[in-house]
Amino acid sequence: MSKKRLYLALITALVLAAVPHGAAAQDKIKIGFLPGVVDPFYQVMQLGVEVAAKDLGVQVVTQIPQTWGVEAQTPILDAMVARGDLDYIVTAPTDKDQMIGPLKAAVDAGIKVITVDTFLGDGDYVNGPVTFPISYIGSDNVEGGRISARGLAKATGGKGLVYINSTNPNVSSVEGREQGFKEVMEKEFPDIKVLGPDYNLDDQNKAAQQTAAVLEREADLAGVFGTNVFSAQGAGTAVVNAGLGGHVQVVAYDATQLAIELMNNGVVSLVLAQKPFDMGYLAVQFAAADAAGVTSLPRRVETGFAIIDKDNVKDPAIARFIYQVPAK
Ligand code: T6T
Image 1: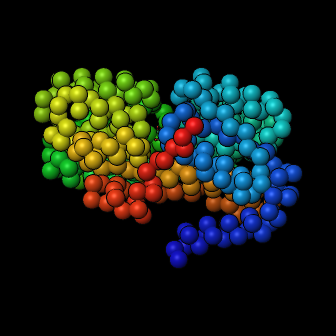
Image 2 (image 1 turned 45 degrees about the vertical axis):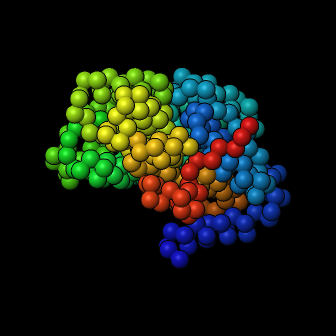
């Protein structure tokens, strides 16, 4: 058993041992869950939160912003703090700098913070500029960007022009993906030139328009990297609408049903599945462990990826990471 799995098993044992099933924790802690926006990734994360809450007998209050951004997330956060009955907030900060103040205010009001998927500052909660969150639980997005670059380089034969379509600046997750992608293209694929990113403000139609404009402008475009659900789905749709499916390769971050469909239709050549269920489940476990007095929680947990292509998509050990959103 790997060290990491051993560690997580140890955490689980500590939590379950320290918190008699449903009793103390239920009486003691209430968690506010505040993800970034309504999308399949966070819907699967919410599943993880709810299953852990049931397993550990803790109460969770969930509020989901309708749009991505500080303007939408901050008022909800402030309202959560004002309730006065929350002990922990599990959240994906929608800006790595602008959400520091509002979340610090939550801590000053006696609420502990765990960040999932995105982080504050530079994400180093031990030696970095921001250290008040208990932990960051999410993907190593720089590594995810590197994997995406190697996937697109393979699909394009290691040469040509490629384009990045992304969501928002100053968001730790997609910023890391862009950074890792560019780093590998620069170091390992000198015959590949990178355009972008353009920012679609997490709007799939905008992503499609931006990609269509680049396809129009750059007749020899070889590939597109969509850094998240709406970027990849928008980019893929634009490639299909331009009749360039299979000709212009697309790499998609996030394993939605549509991304998999686009892959089965030969438009998308690689899908990077994150593990949002794990992020949600572990965050609730960490809150219960902290409440039970555990003081050795890792300050950073990288939840890993499943790399999906048309050869392994049918393998149940891989397909299980496709984002299955429960029907309403
Ligand atoms: O890619 C995920 C998440 O990791 C990112 O921070 C924001 O976008 C998603 O939620 C997908 O839409």
